[in-house]
Amino acid sequence: MSRSDNATHVDTLLQRWRDEEARVRQHMQPEPGLARLDQLAGLDGLAQMQAMLDGELPPPPIALTLDFLLIEVAKGKAVFQGKPQFRHYNPLGTVHGGWFATLLDSALGCAVHTTLEPGSGYTTLEFKVNLVRALTDKVPLVRAIGEVTHRGRQVATSEARLVGHDGKLYAHASTTCLIFDQLQG
Image 1 (cartoon, rainbow, N blue to C red):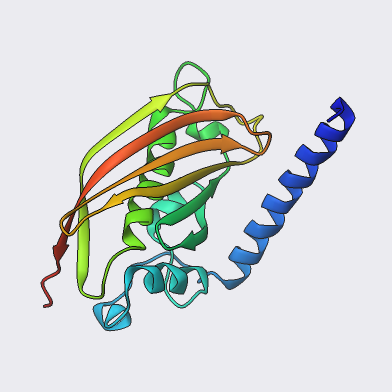
Image 2 (cartoon, one colour; image 1 turned 45 degrees about the vertical axis):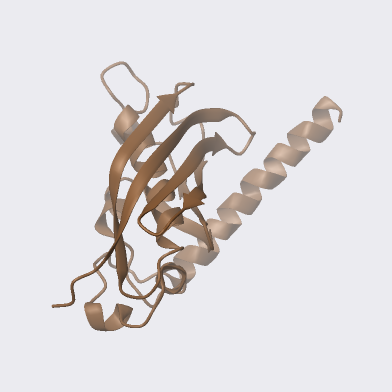
């Protein structure tokens, strides 16, 4: 692929990411919140995540706070998109590692969430992040792509990558989650 062909491909992908975000935002509920138990009753984890994408359930407050949103879900997979901004900077002049970690944690956990049966929940037991490249607000968008690597009866693991539209890897992470029956109350 020539340099100009590659630049065209990168620009096309960035525009596709922006268009996908606009479509998701069209369907999103305008205010963040938490789903009520009656809204979740009988839904498996994938259906819950899809309901959020379809605007039937509110996005979580953290997404508004840190400027990211759920873009795509499938069984064992969750994709979040974020826009690095100056307000996410650390004192060294780059995006704070906590912003990386939050996007990756969301992708990791929600990938596991898509595998849950109705009435089940999960919690993170362990979370590991590797930051491999600095990130600034010159990067227009990044995606955290999480995929389940193992799903047992009580334990699930997943891995995620934080990438730019140009294919650059900024960080990768892994998690171990505990699966449990939720108490209804």
